[in-house]
Length: 378
Image 1 (cartoon, rainbow, N blue to C red):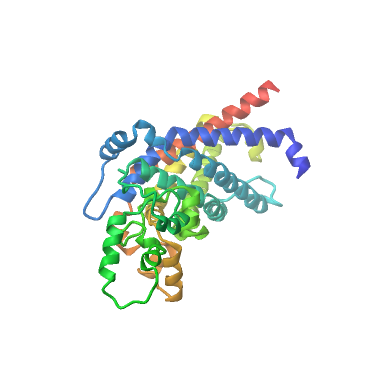
Image 2 (cartoon, rainbow, N blue to C red):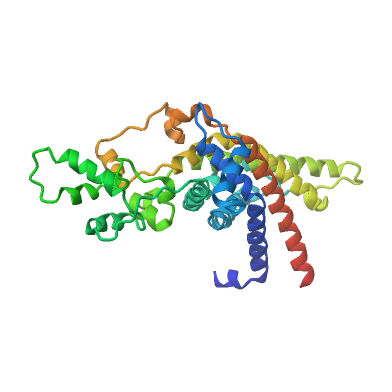
């Protein structure tokens, strides 16, 4: 490992790849914000438009709100895409082992891409959850209750969710209704405040914008919440990785065959054809990203909507004890799609296709430019 880190060639490619990923993410992040808010804000009878989302974010957070949570997605993309391309190269190396030509079949690229996408989902899921809640916060109007500083009964709540002040008026109203019960509990108010769904004073869990920081998420919902929507996330990234790499490999093969036309004598191996144009490879990557985004968008919507649900860990524990069954048909249960979201799975599909296409083009193109510049200066 030390020899690998000391290898200047490895460091050069790692720096170029990381910079390209950050550049592609920054270029298309406003599209991701608009797409995510359309997905989580739309219902079966209500559909948000891109202009409505932009106007709301601009009114509540300014145009900088379109970049809320960017740093989390940037880190998640660096680690996730590094794992995706790294695992894909390792798997395709096994496919190419023993062959005279350095050739990968489209079906092999599909299988390797699906495996790489599944690993990418495991790595990037926590970053995407924090990113998504930051995006929702940028379009949310805060309505906090009046702070209560002298009441010591707030301490148990502060331990569960930092910085949150409950609606004491509504909470006392609940206590008044329960006071008619024949109870010998010495501190009913403190007992009620121990339940996270009473923290808002309305009998409901806190809103998404109240549980957006990592410490708040872990405190209220537990460590497992960082991987909420993992089923739909694995399905999304597996389909995306498989379609992306297989389409890219198909286009790469077609461009090589087109370049061979007219060569005399015809080359025996791909290495004799020579490298393709970086622009052509980048355009092929952009087209492949758009096709893969269209194929996996339904799972992306399911994942985004599940990550916007605040589920306290006590409720999760009760569901496990009661053996709560996931609703929906078998395919929906396996892929994490909620039955209520069937009619809205393809909301924002054009925005995601544009974002993935532009990002793939920018990442591959800037990577080629960075490698060319770094090696030319050495």
